[in-house]
Amino acid sequence: MSELPIEATEATPTSRRRRRWSEWGFWLLVFMVSAVGNALTGVMDAGRQGAHLPLWQPMTWELTSNGVILAMLPLVLWACERWPLHADTWRRRLPVYLLASVVWSLVHVSAMVWLREWVYWLRGLQYHDDQSWLARSVYEYLKDVRTFFTIVTVSHFVDWFGRRRVGEAHLLDAPDDGPAVDPVERPERFLIRKLGREFLIATADVEWAQAQGNYVNLRVRGHDYPLRSTLAGLEARLDPQRFVRVHRSYLVNLSQVASIEPLDSGDARVHLRDGTAVPCSRSYRAALREAA
Image (cartoon, rainbow, N blue to C red; front, side, top):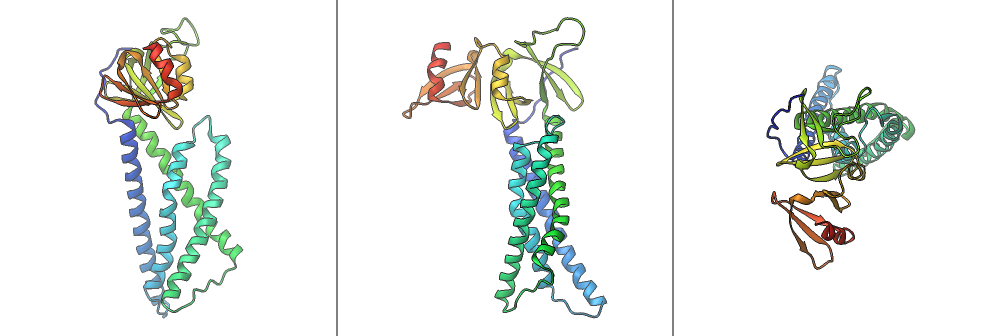
């Protein structure tokens, strides 16, 4: 396999935040357009039946429902990032998502009804719901579960595409037949897959690593590559003479350490040659000084 040049990419934490804001903006547009469209359709349908339906009423129904969904959206996106569904995790996490959809729907219905009652009260009216609370909850859940899992599916697709675009790192495993090209326990290179292409990066070029949920971001010459692993699992595979844990979320390459700045709290700040400063917990400070 020939090594391909590393292309310029955005740092993964920055691109992830940008994707999250883009996702929120996308869903804001979708739900607001849906609310206005449904409200106007309701008014027109009432008119065709010879009834008069003031626009503020269907707008209240739609905006209270979609507004509560949008308010809870960041929590759903955070959960998708914190507990992603992968081929090796979906069986045990799907029941949790199903339970979360029930709680999400109950909160949605409760807040939605309260907001409608409040709006009607401001207009000197009383909000009436012909359905019982149980019937309303079941009816809304049958709609909410589809909305919930649509959001979950889109969020996972956006994350998957983002990793494909930025480039996802993989540890080289031992082949089924024949000797390994690289040491498996102390890998000298990582395989990067990006938009259907593959190339290798040297482990020695990894400047530092940061835990991000179920991934570890490998920093290589100004670019971040997510690796599906825990930081502890990665640390166990790397050479302890070269890579040292400095924080529960950070691992640094000793050759990249420029200076160690003590802090009054007893912690420290590690300054790396690329200009990055990463935190060093007091529990790791002594080991870092000895290794450095």
